[in-house]
Image (cartoon, rainbow, N blue to C red; front, side, top):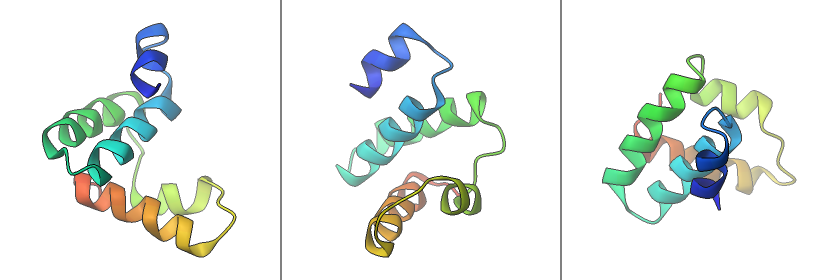
Length: 76
């Protein structure tokens, strides 16, 4: 679904974030790296700190999992 969103609107930042995290957690490093590259193009200020402060989650464990996905993709 993230790819479909990106096809429909190339600057859809949320879809780029989802694709990056999902590919990373699926251990698709090649896709995750490419997705992170595109994410940085559409959201140059993206960082782990930005994700932690701006993406709401219901539980701390969800946020930790999401942040780990970005770490695996190469985000700092």
